[in-house]
Image (cartoon, rainbow, N blue to C red; front, top):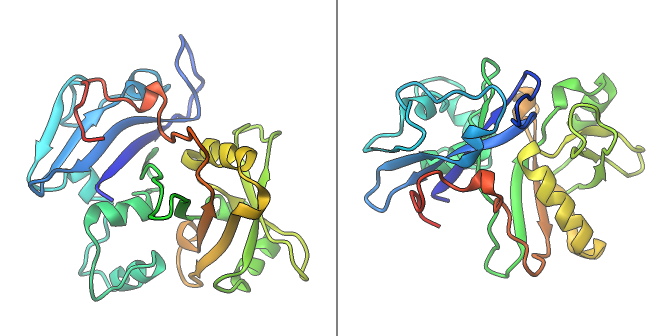
Length: 258
């Protein structure tokens, strides 16, 4: 993993042709020389309420740095904090061999409760040509206490079920996640918004036998946003191109690698 999309989640209503909800606004990548590069995508011009990031005012510029840009490095936990190593374990990494910052941001999503920014990797086929993606379950803080308790009783490898939430008033593309076993059906959270559209495509084009969602880790002491790490496997349909819309394309052509 050497490239991440940067998404902005708009809070206000969409006006004058802008899009509401969330949308990609930039790309962050590791350069071959070991530095970092950032460029805005066309989504930066259409996502409601988005303004250029501090120190990156020109949407048509390509920014490079030997060090990770502060707005992203500030989203990584300081290695001196006592919860640093536990946080690596929560994300599925070896604390004795810390991952590259890009890889860590790709799993933790760089989330903060104080703003509307998140980062995510674009899915790519694995060595067998299949879709494989790990993500933290979203929306856990909003589910009933019984559902949170059910998450606490899950084990690594337990199967989970994807469910289209077409009548979700906040996001009609939402994909919910629930349990379905001897304890009954508990809606426990959601697939991240940035994956929802592609997950719907996969569910529509892959046979159910070739779609699998399972528990990767249960982090009992972690914050809600890192409580449950999931792993999804599926087929990779012909002509399936995630993150391919215009909003994902850089304003400066070929500003980043492909």
